[in-house]
Image (cartoon, rainbow, N blue to C red; front, side):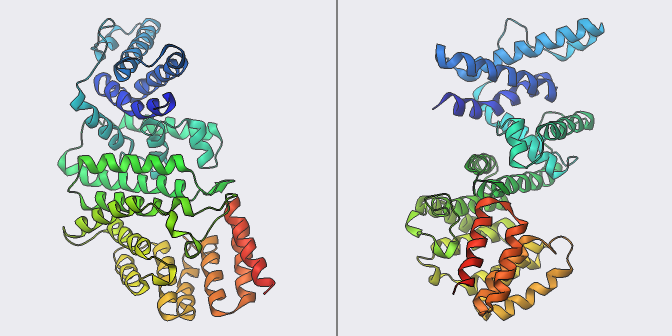
Length: 408
């Protein structure tokens, strides 16, 4: 394993260990970053230590204690020293069984209900996924300074909330897990279809979301919606290799080479969602995973079981108020009952401020007008969608669709 990959894997474990021992998330995070920087400079030349996690915990603990002692001296507040219990000459090395718990607690802490979801996403990517502030800022198209402020505010909110570094109580867990699932879902979506930039996908984000979903599922194997999310990201990511052409161009689902799909991931995701469905009434992530499984099981686009997909979207649309679900349901309606029926359903979304004017609405209208044989309307909507997206591959795809229709 490359040093960079090893450090990214170990970072949340080390941060969890320090935060648990020293009870100061922000200070622990700063100390861990210093330890990671030291490792990135020393390990390539000197070799990776026999126990790299213990090395990082020891170095980070010493850095944290040094910072605290300097702060104590500056402020003359000797009482702060009682917060720290690890002697300078005693490397912190938590027992192995605590590693998984620390990482999970860290994930749950980053998704504290007091935080807006956008801040929880940023803090999770920084503390748990190991991305730099600059990487997160690029992913969400904001200046690095803005993202740094967002992360700092999130850490301050956690600190002032009084939450301890411990597993939530049973009464708190359900609400916390729901936030974690929402955060992982958003991270995966940004990785699977980047909202801006020259690349269609951000594989690093998608893989981190899958890794974290696996970790959460390993600790909460009986939680049906945790299983649903893991199945969903596996079944969706299974198509990744077929989604772009030789030059990075977007390849639509119905045009993909399905021999490139990851059949092992499809089998795993399908088994997980089937087991989750057996536990009772399915939730939104399980339903989306079941829809993804139906797409993945079709050997050809023409073999897709659209009636079953439509039935699942009807259930999904009935348990929540999400305009993106309604948008996807309109596509399924069009595939089963014809494009006119799908277009009629879209009209209801024009009055929804959450999606009215969104380029995704123009994308779907373009496809449905194309299926209906109305080339002029399809061209107009593909052009409007191209102007609305900040993804360069998606823009190129939409303009190419419009140009192809114009020359038919």
